[in-house]
Image 1 (cartoon, one colour):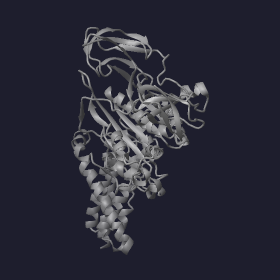
Image 2 (cartoon, one colour):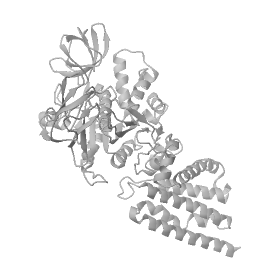
Image 3 (cartoon, helix red, strand yellow):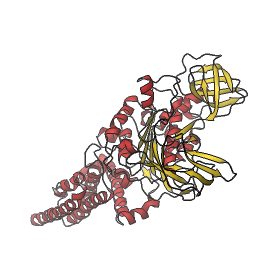
Length: 590
């Protein structure tokens, strides 16, 4: 199936003579063999989005269809790799061409020459169905990849043995129900635009613990849930995503740098290999897949990068892993959609974005979930998706933010005012929300403490009351407030400064376990409750606001996990003593 170029408009190429080609077929454009994908058909004319620079192309050059859709190669060799938007391994490309990507270069996504040790988990004569695990490969110290039966193969194992082989060599032979024999290799291909199938989707009832207090306590995301992190430039979106990548309770991390600045992606590429996985002490790259598609790379490849990343994530989810996918940022992906839509001369929607923006975003986020995999011995896996949104000027009323908010259940709204005050993570507690709280109540009660949700709700209530009182203070001043209201402001200040503020670069404060978070909440609420009684007994509010025990409560976040119980008890006994002294002084003054 070949045709000829009739028009070139930036990343869009129109070719004639393509009647026999199908939508979403991958094509090779011109003698330079540029990779493209058919996105529209009109008779024998095909509109192709080219994933590489198209300068220098002209009418009459050949276009050849491969007859297959854009697919990801899935198998041993994914973990620790750095790919571009169409899954070309960038380290291999650099070895071949130097530091600049050359057009039309063809490199297989998975290394064809590397030998892996395959260990079977089934025997010859056993019956297998699509999705069943037939063996495993130790990919890194942290990840043992499960080799699964590809879709469409059901039958009896004829041959299988422990061996060293490449991803293309036969690992097992299956005699299918129709009598045909199928060779199963360690690698399978999957079209990136189609979600991988599963047996059943489960309700999200377990949090994805991140060690970030404002997220875990106030606005948690469920395993298999979806979250959006919108925020203006400089509000800390990338650091929030880095923290989640480092600390979230996920077996596998897929990080997509989609249209972000090159130097930001360089930070990730330099930092991740040096970071130690806190649970195992190994390099974080030993459970991470990176997809780098920076803002200076061809626009069309941004769209592909999102789908490539989520297909890889689904593959690991099917093995029974908990996977967290970070997309930074979906706004740049939406800009690529807008550019291609404009080139296709489609009727624009709001702010020039295509009318189908919302449905494309939904198709992407809907691929997250806590699922039961296919197979006769099903496994449970979870894919959580956290998408950063970069609204121009920080205005979340723009179409990408609004379309995202209609889909996701967790919204961490980053606030430039908090960022300017150096309060990080700059998640605004008055505008953010999580709709997973009700479904996860039971999990917190069983696995942390029945006190968790009441303490969390009380803290949230105090923060909301503080916002109302601050409005009154602006009008009539602090002196107009009663002692009880001033105490509420002091308690809310403790919540903001001692609990919600977290230093990502401090060795202890960077991660807080749930039991420690609960103790910190209880300490702040104990200060509020006991100070309230002291105020009712006549103690001076100014004295109570400045007692040294507050400093001790505030410093709990810098105390190591093993010592936090001891420090908590010590802080409370100091608090009781100092409040009793304040009440005693007040009575003596009377």
